Image (cartoon, rainbow, N blue to C red):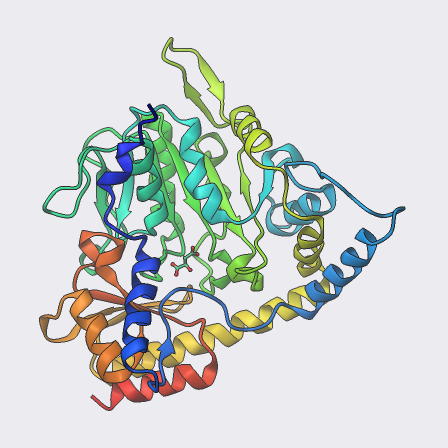
Length: 408
Ligand code: MLT
C-alpha cells in the first residue's frame, strides 16, 4: 500500500499564480473579445539580451560538433559562469564568495523551495507576511507546519507582519525561530530593508543560532544607495545567511531558467547530538544527487550578461521596467490610490479602494477594466486589502492599464 504525503492536504487548492491563471482563463472563455492586460505574475516581456542570444547560438553550435560537444556538466555549474558571478556580484563590491560556495541551478524558485530539505523537520520557520508563497508552501509540503487556521495562518509558523504601519520592516520574532526567510527587494510589496534593518536580522541570527534564507532575486532593480544588494554586505552574514539570486528578472531568463545559490562554508547548524556542521556540504550533496546541472547553452547565455556589452543591455531592460514602475506608481497615486514599492523593485503594492478584499478587487479589475493583477491576500493574511501590479508588462499595455484605472 502506498500512502500519500498528507501535508499536501494542508495547502489551499492551487498555487497562487495557477489560481490567478485559472480565473483569467475562465473569464476569457466567457469574454473572448476582451482586451486583457496582464500585470499579474511577474513575468518579463522584453526579449533576452542580444549578447545572451548570441552566446547561446554559439554554444548550440558547439554542441553540434563532436570536438566541442558536452554531456553532463558539473552539477554546481561551469567555472566560467561561477567566476563571472563572483567577480561581478561579489568581488567587485569587496565581498568574499568562493567558487565552491556558488551553486548554479535552474532558477531561484527551485532553490528557495528545495533549501528546506537540508534542515531538520522540527525547525521553526519564520516568514514575513505578505511573502512569496514558495517559502511557506514548501515547508508545509515537508511537514514543518501544522494545519491552516481560520486566520489564514499555518500553525507552528512564525509570521512577521511587514506592513505599511511598520514601514515594511518586520519586527524581530518574539519567540525563537530557526529558519528565517527574507526577500529583499521584497516580492510582493516591492519594498526594501535598509542596511541597518538587515543588520538587525543578521545580529538576531547570530545571537539565536538561526539561519537566514535571503532571496535577492530582484537585487538588480535596487536604485537607492542604502539598500544592500547582497546580504553579505552586512558584517557577520557569511556565518548565518544563504543567498538566492536569479537571472530571471535580471536578464529575462524566466523561460530560459538559470539562477544560483550561495552557501558560504561558514554557515553552520547543529545536529541533534549538539555537534556543529557546515551547510555547504549538505547542499552540495543534495544538489549533486537531485540535480544534473543547468544546460551548458543556458549557462553560456547567462555568463554573457557579465560582459560590458551584456551589462549595458541588462541595464537598458531594467530601466525600461522601472520606467513602467514609475508610470504605474505615479498613475495610481494620481488616481487617489495609496501605492508602495516600484522604486527599488518592479512591483507596486496598492491598497484596495473602498474596503474591497484583495480578491474582490481582482474580480473588479478583471471584469470592469480587463486588467489582471495579483491579490495581496494570496501572499499572506497581512496582504489582505492589498493588490500587486507588476512593471514587467510592455510599455503600451502599462500605459493603457493606468489610463483604464484612472478612468475610475
Ligand atoms: C511572481 O510573480 O511573484 C514571480 O513571477 C513568481 C516567481 O518568480 O516565481
